[in-house]
Length: 158
Image 1: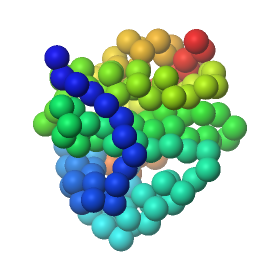
Image 2: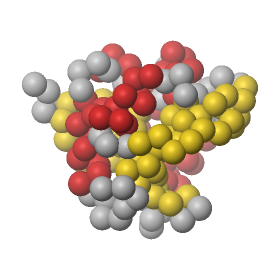
Image 3: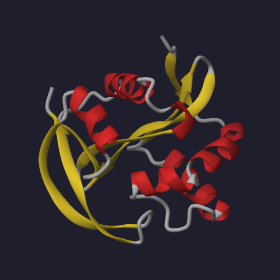
Image 4: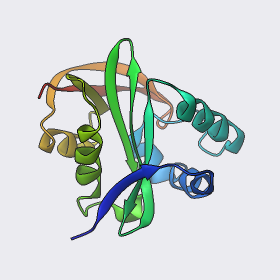
């Protein structure tokens, strides 16, 4: 079994995270991504903003000590939401589910909300296994697809 952990993001992680988050296949699957995943200046500015937010937490996800992605939470419209990104080469090993479980242990409030492209079956499976239930859908513009797509909205009450 893979040893999954969360730790603070270091400046030294940013190069690897930038590369992970600009993988074209991953960008398409995640759908709701940066406007231009290849824009390093925009990535750095976004990461600096997120890391400085008082009501957000962004963690590095490691698997057997190796940086494999991020997991975080933030408040939007008064609701706590979670997000995660696992490098495509590490998917299918239970890392996202374990990282999400660890993240949820750090969030004292409930409910917690999540969202995913409705056709992102893998991410929806991770969220459902963690106890999230579908509460609806909405159509929103997805930079990763350059189109409006359906997004599934989920909530965890426990």
